[in-house]
Image 1: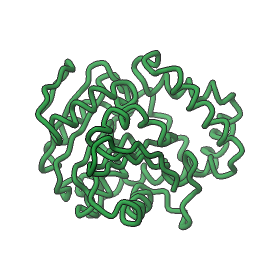
Image 2: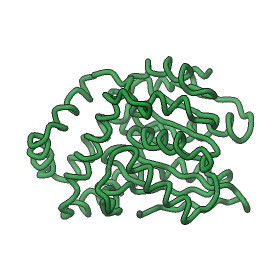
Image 3: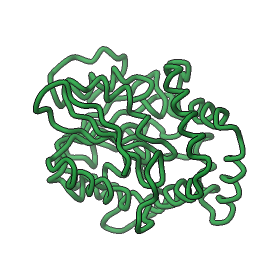
Length: 288
């Protein structure tokens, strides 16, 4: 598993693990990791098949499968409970980790988590279509024929409320990474397998379905939504406190699907408020 490390500026600071969303990578956490270096020793992972990580050996790219790889990383490399951050698919992965291995988790922060409450929107209604076997492969292969720059900017236009907020360096880094992945034969399969694994959790009625897992999370949880998120409806925030035993919910009125990229300072302040200090939030929004 490929990781990016932002060493803590404070001796003895606890570790934090950052988990990206579908099609993303460790690069999605760069600015938030920098903001939190005084509090945590940051490790952003590339999930199997994404970023610079090869697919997992067992081929399991479901949220539970991805979580198992992150658990292995924590046990082998960090060897202590950590603060967990997850965005979108990464939020679903983080939930699996926190529910199944509470001994490894100090706190849980979910940013626009991909949970079954997600409502169909103009931006996500196509995802079940892409997940159809055969059709998905054709559509993704066709999409990958587009220039890397066009693909990255399209993704950012969808995920961010104001793409112009992102430093140009972050855009260039994402384009470079996309170009470096274009030759990877498994790139299409990693995306589709992860998408299909995620969608299967939406129809799961068993004891390990996501909302049942949420009831097993023992640590305090911060959940951040973006009011302008076109992929995950911020109204899902109302369901969080019914299932997580110790949840704090914040809705940022001027954020899209990746608040850690658009508003890393606000996410960092929220995290400090609940898990480090009692700094007041300056964001216009709501918290409970």
